[in-house]
Amino acid sequence: MFAIIQAAGWPIWFIIVASVVALAIIGERWWSLRAAVVMPRNLLTQMVQDYRQNGVTSQMLSRLAKSSPLGQVFAAGLKNAKSPTPIIKEAIEEAGRTVAIDLERFLNTLGTIAAISPLLGLFGTVIGMIEIFGAQTPSGTNPLVLAHGISIALYNTAFGLVVAVPAMIFYRHFRAKVDVMLVDIEMQAIKLVEILHGERQ
Image 1 (cartoon, one colour):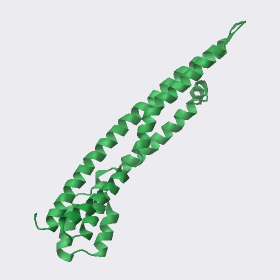
Image 2 (cartoon, helix red, strand yellow):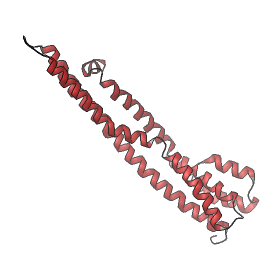
Image 3 (cartoon, rainbow, N blue to C red):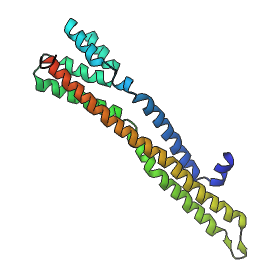
């Protein structure tokens, strides 16, 4: 592997750094965007039972806010349980915007890496071409410099694509997953509002 990196020349290090960052983001988002973490099953049912038995308590709000992003939205609604419906909805929407920002964390960075990796590969290709033209001397072509320039050009192009394709796939996957989760959170929040005002059992 080190021999390939040497053959690819110094431009490859930009792509390697981008790949490490992309892998870190993919791993972190894969772990953080699990359904059990974002929207625990039966949280709405358990919360409604607790609300009907004990009302709104500070312990309940604190537990909900710390439990999950969905819990944060529910806690915002329950804090205003005795307020008119528009006030509850406004509090839920504010909490929802905060949750959306948290769920989308690092995704722009991942999308940027997916977009710039081919450009970094192209940059390496240009450096390789410069080395190839540098191999031309009045006395003839230096085969070693020529071969090194070709290696830089090809390896950087290949590595740039190898990083860009998975990064783009995971970026699209996580974006779609976040969109679905936000819709689900919104639907459950609407149910909460209807329950608080007796419109739903």
